[in-house]
Length: 236
Image (tube, rainbow, N blue to C red; front, side):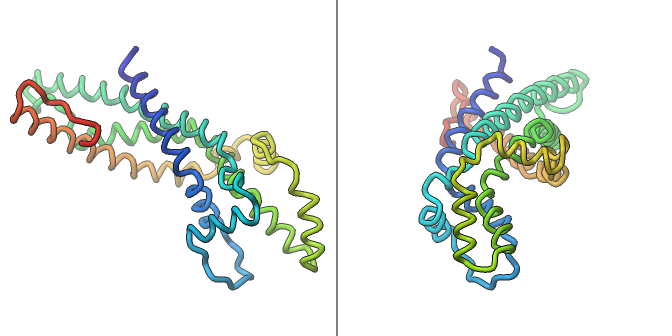
């Protein structure tokens, strides 16, 4: 099994665990970011308060709305990112060794090369997995959109409750979300927001640039104190 495939599988596994633990917070965060009810002056709810409100009004399952496509997205996203990161990293290391043979550099990948490797990996990841995250976001915010659309049209709270109770009982599945996105914007609707997301690739790119730099320094310090062992622990 290649290093790239091992890294891809490891990244996907770690992403799934993190997603399962933090998903309710992500759901609330997404709702807060997409809240645009300008007509109502209301106190902004904190994260915990909003989580409790969602559970009380919509049930526990709404905190995990869109979890299935999100897990698929996380698996694909982390797997793709780490897979291509290792491929681009291997190429960068090969070029660094070639330069060393010509008397240029010490054979290690510099900060700029690390930044480019991480940025390229991030761009590939975004272009391949953006449709999944469009569907996930649609599922996370589905209930809020329904309520807003109909509350603007209905005259009385009683009538609003009646209509919503008739509309919301069906299960809003991944298939519904995909069909909704396609009906609204067609095929390219699944790449909605891809350009700002590509810009945000700078975040993990800088993260991995610093990660590789600090990892290299840590390994160097370890090898000086113990020449037989230059590895690092998971905690480190």
